Image 1 (cartoon, rainbow, N blue to C red):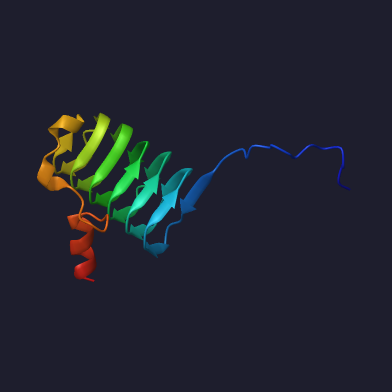
Image 2 (cartoon, one colour):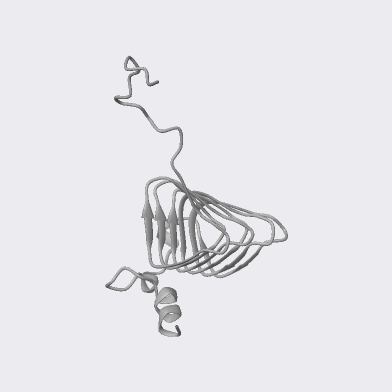
Length: 143
């Protein structure tokens, strides 16, 4: 049934995609190396070395750190994207953005500040000692 001559050593997985489905709520931080798609709700920090996609029904209450991002849903918190941040459809962002490249469709909404160079970021907007932003702490205190 199984071919013993098949080499599986050093095999690379075809994809490393993590999906938070619609109707799922995660209370806590997410840290991974692969792509993430969020169609549910995450209350906490979402961090990856790859791409984050927030679907039209997706919501993040907390900070987002990644290499690139496509956002169609809601994000309340600080967004740090190393390369391209793309706000699509009815995206709603409430918080500051730090990115190298920024693209936004006319139907998306963004309330906050955008920094496209590290030298432009204000010194008083640093994270606190436990690594969470002020936005994340305020959200947690009201829960």
